[in-house]
View 1 (cartoon, rainbow, N blue to C red):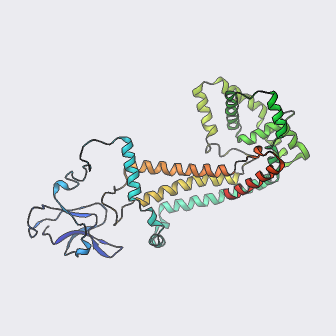
View 2: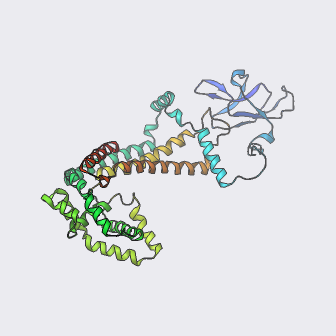
Length: 384
């Protein structure tokens, strides 16, 4: 079809219920008379249905453009850089441009606005395949938490938390006297011991701290083991059962020989699954409840997926999107948002785990120990 300048490329904005020319422009020869009939060619930056509209009001034609073929995207004008130097950006510059585009073009804040919440309630998203996957994940989380909590109740873990606190608080004066006579342990030897314990915990399927408690009750003359043995505490009974089940003494010897006989590459391959939190999440533990581990795993999954969905939804094109915002995001945007969501999830889990760290050894007196215990209880409450 041919049309003169009174016909503008426009689309119907379903939000304002008016014709709009934002993100739409006409490709025509700009050096001819306005009354001259020319082929009606429109170019758009979004996926709205557009067409030629006669006599669009001036208020709806703000920033409306009529460009020639050379300036259009298909003519190469839309792909040229602003500086026009023709020099390709480096990898760092490209990543910076992607981050700048995310910040500039994101509409994530609008999702939490009144209009966004209203649209959320009216939409049919709850029956989509993605929503069904979300409901299934939440149901799996619920049943997993119930099963883990029931398992924790049968183990009576709350009964031995008091004994666990006493185990992690050795006599400070005796330690200081021993340190005077014996030199400090070499860092390399200490590091090797830690690596062996990680490897042993992987082979036994038990977390490192629980394995140390099991070794303590099996070690002759161990101060911690004698402390636990008083009154046959529930923790002592559980540690003895764990020590018998995994045969801690022989397992420690096998882990030591395996680590010392391996080369550095084999050691790296052995230690990676041992120190990876996600791979060791299923290990048995006398210290960390199964309920909290299940919650942490699902928190990691849901938080990463939720952040990625929020950013990708926020970067979707809309009727009011700027013309410079890229459509679909591209590989760079996908990679940056994916890594950002994963790292944020890891940082949140790191913060939650740091709340539960016990630091009773730093207490210098019984009063200090009581303060540490109260602090730990507050941090544990904040964790939940």
